[in-house]
Amino acid sequence: MTEKEKAQAGYLYNANYDEEILKDIHACNDLCYDFNQIRPSDRESQKKLLEKIFGSMGDHVCVNAPFWCDYGYNTTVGDYFFANHNCQILDGGKVTFGDHVFIAPNCTFTTAEHALDAQQRNAGLEVALPISIGNNVWIGAGVIVLGGVTIGDNSVIGAGSVVTKDIPSGVIAVGVPCRVQRKITEEDKKRYPILEE
Image 1 (cartoon, helix red, strand yellow):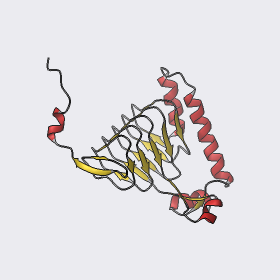
Image 2: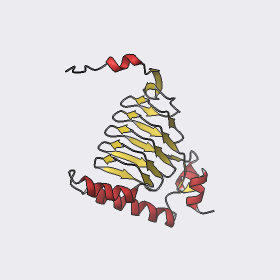
Image 3: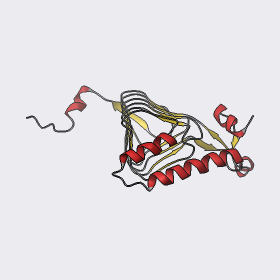
């Protein structure tokens, strides 16, 4: 079994010294570098590069530079996806974003978990745990989502949270570690003023 196959199967794998993996990471990093050099107003050129980076990509995808991703092909994004500045996706494992996902600045999604044993860690071993983000999810500024986490549809993750466990659908969750605060209700439609014309 190759190191890449071990990673996809959820086993410890050599992420630091395997030639095939390093080649994939360097190729994706180069694409991200190129993406980050494009003028912000040139959305068409950005789109073309994102189509090369992501494993699959829906319609109306917008990513603000700088953006970094490890492999790219392990990440899929749905329709109406928006990621603000400084989004990082460490996608040794699968990272799936649904439709209408909005990501605030300075967010990290990391499937990587390094070995706890020092000898294994020093040998470059880590494990990649998948991340799944549902539809209509809002991720606040500075959020970190760790591997093995699923965030359900229609949920909001508050700024600065570290998401270490699954978050159900239709809730507001916040904190370190991130915990459900409450369900989102019809009353939340009145939270912000609406200009009636």
